[in-house]
Length: 230
Image (cartoon, rainbow, N blue to C red; front, side, top):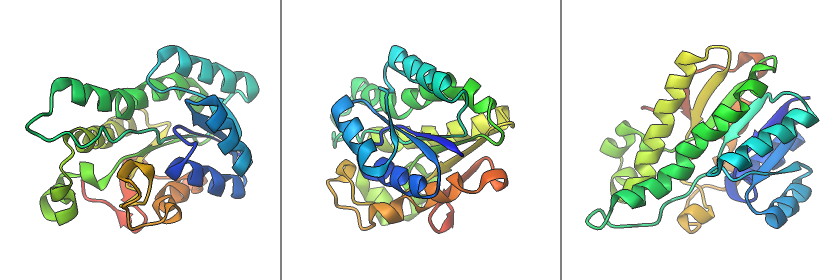
């Protein structure tokens, strides 16, 4: 059975991905900071709850130790935890505003990947799926009206970093598949449910990559329709 961890999964895209992957036969660990909400969410989809705060070293280490003691390996890590950072205008945007977003979206991703890498390397065909965004694509932000008008310096910049981290990991660690996904404009708390896609549509790319097995590529950036321009 494929063992999968999804961070930030007590709602939205993470919860829907957990539901779909449990249905696909995965042993899903649903990661969340809040114990009560996490346990409730995990029970609702038949997943295991894992308390993890991606911004805290001790929490991430404890989570890795829990998975190591229970199953000894991790087949798939889905780095989904993320924050929007709020709509701070560019004229008011300061270094601390960027730091707050990067702490979860970028440093949290690195922190979790680092801690769980030994467990991934103990698996047969390990895979890391990083949830990025078209708002972090240079192509999208220079050619599409939505990306140009979104106006969130912290979020967009953090997702650009996520896609580059994905490529660098893919080049540096060929034994693990690293890929980035763009869920698309999906109705979640992150955008006040203004998105035009359902959470099921928003998790199509995640679920596809998580169920490819030995055929999983590495170093790609995709959405539910195929490759996304960097």
